Image (cartoon, rainbow, N blue to C red; front, side, top):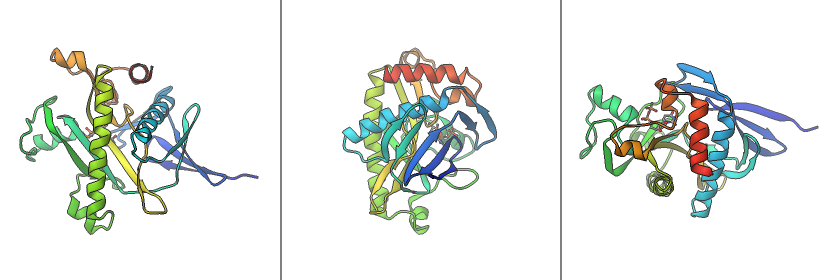
Length: 248
Ligand code: UDP
């Protein structure tokens, strides 16, 4: 008899351990504002799983190691077992979200950045936030190292890898008329201590996607979870459309 162990991995995914293998199941659960807003949307899990598989395969082909092993239709992927590094990595090409909120509550934005929704950031920023606290907060390199989560050279290599992932996604999305405004990624370590790209990738849950034509006409049209966060449209419709634009 095979036993299956299921546990929650973050707010929208489950981890399943079965026959010595590890699987990520992408559910339809949707949350925003650190879990304050919660709902379920049809097909969301399937779309985010297929998009992640699509992007992980691209990263592997570009020489970036990931935890992806295989897509298991409709909404599951087999992954390599990793110990997740307890920080989230955020990369920003345009001003939005918490960067703007931090500025509005008195924090200075990094030099050279205009604190306006939609302003382009010429030299993309890579930032870290906590992962396992009730509310994510920005964390600096010193605190990450003091907690023993990463060494300096590991932090540097994660930042460099994040910039590579950014360049690969940004270029491919721009060919499809989509701006990658910002995104969040996670990394994990395997038993040999190697750092691999983990979690999910290039989904509308973890990225801000904006329609390029609309942006050039002075309007920000969100093709991501902001439609749910700010009640700007039907999430299932928007996710289906972004999936088709990226993958078909
Ligand atoms: N993000 C995410 N999970 C989080 C926090 C952020 O996927 O727990 C993504 C978010 O969708 C956006 C990017 O990371 O694409 C930057 O998010 P930001 O820090 O601006 O915070 P938010 O406005 O999402 O609260």
